Image (cartoon, rainbow, N blue to C red):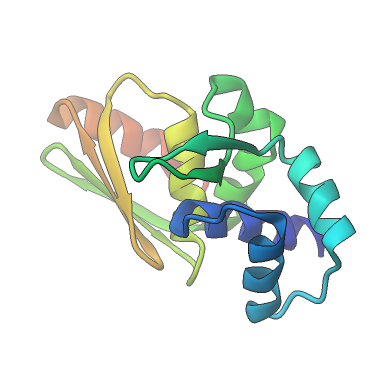
Length: 149
C-alpha cells in the first residue's frame, strides 16, 4: 500500500504543480487513498521531495533530480513493476506502461540522467523517449526490455 502511494505521489507531483501538503492530500484522496496529513508529511520526507521554483515563479514539490535518486527512492522498483513493452524506431523509444504509471516511470527515467536521452514525454500509459541516435535508441530499448512484465 505504501509503495503504491509513493508511486502515486511521484506521479502526481510530476503531473500537477502541487505546492502544499494539503493539495497533495486532496489529490491522493481523489485517487482513492485514505491518508492523513501526517502520513503525507512522512511520505514527503521518505521520498526526499523538495520544493523548487517552477517557470511560473511558484514553489512546487519535485522529486530529487540526481542519479542517486533513481535507486534511493525506489524508482527502479516503479520501472520494474510498470513496463509492459519497449520498442524503438529510428532514434525514438516507445515505452508502454500500465494505465496511470507513465508519469512515474518517466520521472524515474529522467532521474537516471542517461547520456543518450535528449528528452522524454509521458501520457497516461505511454512514454516517448528521443535519443541522440538510432544506435542509442536500440541500446536503450534493449536495456529497458529487461523490465518488461
